[in-house]
Every structure is written in structure tokens, then in C-alpha cells.
Amino acid sequence: MRPGAAVARLASANPVHAAVWAAVVASFTCVGIARGDARLWPYLTVVLVCTGVTALVDRGVGFSSGALWLLVLIGTLHLAGGLAPDPTGAGVLYGMWLLPGALRFDQLVHAVGSVAATVTAWQLLGTWLSPATPPRVQAWLAALAGLGKGAVNEIVEFLIAIRVRGTFVGGFENTGWDLVFDAVGVVGAGVFLVASHAPRRPVRDARPLTEPVSLVSSW
Image 1 (cartoon, rainbow, N blue to C red):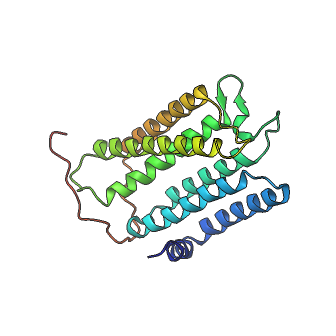
Image 2 (cartoon, one colour):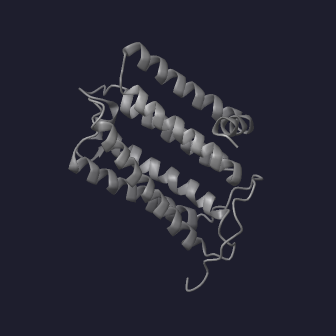
């Protein structure tokens, strides 16, 4: 299935999610164009590519409504963080301190993004792993996937920063704290998924991606 058809299928199955996400993307696009903001295009490219990938993967997973809302939330926070101005000073929302000296908007977004990545990876893994696989193993693998998302994000931020001026990505210390909050997000999500006995895969019907793989062994 092509990405466009996959997005249409996902939107048809989840009209409220689709309407909210379309409104968010359209709003930031219109404001960005009106301001002549060059940062709009790399940010828009990232979220649209992620939307297409999500739609393609959803065909085999059938992400839960909660997981899709998490993805809509992190997409919205990402666009706002990079494109909306910081009301407390110069720069963009990503640089705003929510708790002075303790928590920036950027760090909150990294934590939430890692939660979203871990939850969706948990559901994706549910289509691959045997039901006999212990939940803690599935959570561990999902957490690793969440950390991988964080690493890819830092690479993308770096590449954008050297090509587009005024991205406010930050330096070495910023990257370090981004990774710390990525870890906080994946650990928190992993513990919650196991402790809450979250469904090992979404209850919605989906087309299996592969035959289940057993990872019981020594675990």
C-alpha cells in the first residue's frame, strides 16, 4: 500500500484523530507561510514523513486510540516547540523554561516523545512476539526502540541545524539533556506498561506483520 492510501485508510478509521491532526498541521503551515519562516519546511517534512510511516505500520498493527492520541500530541508539541515564539523571551518555545533551572519545554517534549515511541513500539512488538514472551521482555525491547527514536531525532536535529539558521537546537549540553529525558520517558513508559498489565497488542483488528517470535528462553 502506498503512503497516501495508507494515510487515507488510517484517517477513515480514526476520523477524530485525523481531523485534529489536519487542523494542527494546517494551522502551523498557514502561520509559517505568512511569516515567511524557513524553519517550517524541515519541521513539516518530518511530521508528514512520520505520519506516512505511522499509517503504513498501522495497517499491520492497528494502533490503539490512546497510542494515536499520543502521536498527535507529540506531533503538535514538536511543531509548537520549533515554530512558536517563546513568550518569555527570544527564540522559540523549545527554549522556554517551564520550571526555571529544572525543566525546559524541549525536555518535556523529549520525555513525551519517548513515551509515545515506547507505547507504539510495545504495540508493534505485540504483533511479532509470541504471547509466551514475558511482558518485561516486550517492555525492554520497546524501551530500546524508544531510545533509538531519540538517537535518530538528535541526528535529524543536527542535520537541520547545519542547514537552516535559527533552529535553536542547542549544543553539546542540550543534546545530553535531550538524551536524559528520552531515557526518563522510555523507563517511565516501560514500567507503566508492565505494571498496568497493558494489552500486549491493540484489540483492533489488524493484518499480522509476521509470524509470532518466541523470546522466552532464559527470561
